[in-house]
Image (cartoon, rainbow, N blue to C red; front, top):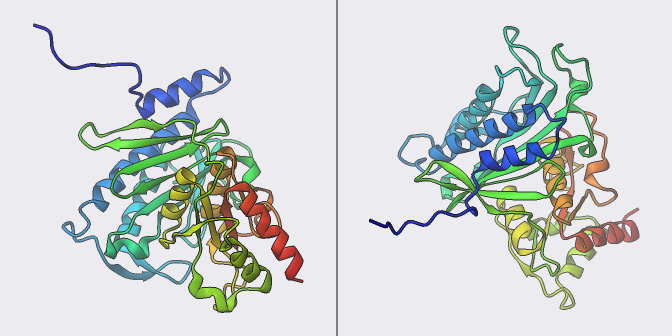
Amino acid sequence: MPHNLTFHDKITTIERHFLDEQKAHPEATGELTQILYDLALAGKMIASKTIQAGLADILGATGSRNVQGETVQKLDQFADETIFRLNDHTGRLACMASEEQDELIPIPEKYPKGRYVLLYDPLDGSSNIDVNVSVGSIFAIYRRKTPEGTPGTLEDCLQPGRKLVAAGYVIYGSSTMLVYTTGNGVHGFTLNRMLGEFLLSHPNIKMPAKPKYYSVNQAYEPYWSPGVLQYVRWLQTGENNLSLRYIGSLVADFHRNLLAGGLFCYPADRKDPKKPGGKLRLLYEAAPLAFIAEQAGGYATNGHSGILDLEPTKLHQRVPLFIGDKKLAEKAEEYIAKFDK
């Protein structure tokens, strides 16, 4: 008896996609593919907690503070440990670094040391957890610089974004999506909860030619430099025809602008004397998202030069960030050069 189910080639799981991408590189060992698949698994595990946060007693703070001086949320801790434990024993990584940890995270002595380095923000935007706003995980992967087989060092982590071999994020919202690039375009996958699998939903993402939105916290306007102030006022002019959309969760703001077109801004400001160089972290947030933006036809800058060209000097280095539509981001550099000395 004939059935009504129809199967076709358009259904592509994330595993099939990774393997297809690997085939395009005969020299590939498969290690990078496996790291990405482990990160996809981490995304599934974290997603399973975010959707039941209120029921699973994981909302709220642990009482401790991270290296940034921010209160660590319980879900932050779960996400941090999940990513670490899925990657510490595989033999594919030399070391790791997390936005939640003060120092470099070594691979335990009993496990082999690999050729890659993983840096990650386990749960970006976690201050929004309690109010049910989208949050996300961001990751960046580099090839190590020091000899393979030895413990990874700070030198392996402090590399400019131009050296990235892969970067991506998982956004936990009304649906869970994983977006990544290995320098061969940007691809997005949506988690089918019934199947427990990421399916390719957004192949070859490109930022729309005509941007719709700009995202910035206007409350900080009194603390901006003259160049930033003039730039944001230019964004608001009729010639741009942009609407303001600001969530306050970097992954969520970036994701919307990536798909719908727009620019996210987090300029340096004078409000917090402890953070004169900006708030967002170069290694865990700005560089990996800049890699994705560029692969999608966009651009990211600190207001003076491209984020991907910045040479990091410490693990938790902060930078201003203008990221998204290429023309809008380049205009920020023009205004800052003109009005700020």
